[in-house]
Image (cartoon, rainbow, N blue to C red; front, top):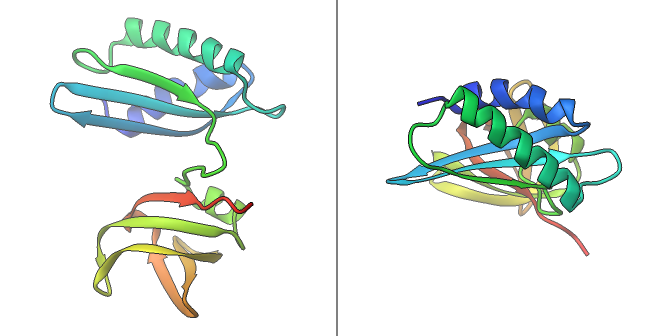
Length: 150
């Protein structure tokens, strides 16, 4: 069974060869149901044709390499307005925006935080929630998304 990191190393060059970039990858395994979700970006914006091309090519590579035992569902999409954030570089791009996140374990008695992303310091993100600043290590972050503002 491949790790998320191994899947990323296998699939990132495939996505890039098609003129897109791999924004992120989610590998979810619940019992017999496994989902591999790829979020892709393209300079001109991601359309259905990008998703179809990437899906076809990734499927072919996955069939040959066979990194996931058993059946799985492959999903390819754009990150959208409420885009997930995975890396420190991605957090840096969204400084000043509202972010919602969930931690792997409680920090100061809570796991869910929503506030303004104030910056990145080392391997920690700086989040302001109700006028209180929190310095949260990126390895504690289970899931983070930009909160779209309209």
